[in-house]
Length: 231
Image (tube, rainbow, N blue to C red; front, side):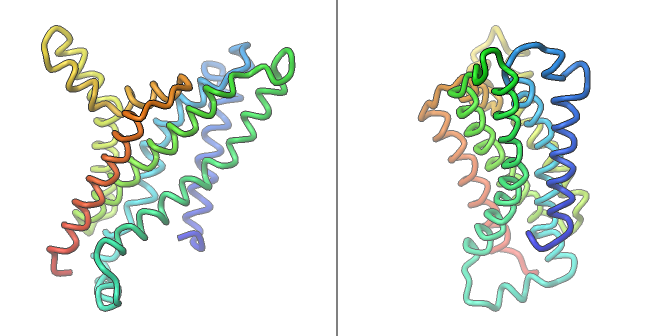
């Protein structure tokens, strides 16, 4: 995957979009905001991930199914879970490489602060860990949706929908059921709730367990899907 032009295009689009939003667009620019913090970046990046990650993962199994090349993997001495995890880690590694250059934002904002270095590094580190776990969950969802269909566009659309619902949809449902017992359930299920908790610089094991559980769940279901299908 890292040898394909798609990898470099994806990284370039992500960095261009985040750079424009963070430094140039008036409504989200740090320079106009006047405070040495990266809250705008960490608020916008999950929404960029909603489209970036499904675009990366949509080919994982959909293309194999469309071209009939999965059988080439199936005849190798590999178990289904090994194939799923290999594709998952390849996609997640690409997301990591896309996120890595953004560390320069941390340095730049620190240098712009008065005095220099006046930035809450604890919150930044927590937010980056939250972003990586969020990306890991979105990637697992994308891998799962790619195993459902041979059409990459459909896989992309389903992944965007599920990721959006997991990140923002449960928050909306929690507000709808604010006066009922279901509010707490939807709040616990919300990706955003756990992500915001980590963005405050607080690493709660409940948030870590939640994101890891989401990843394991979708990868196990994906393994079951490809194991029970005749390609």
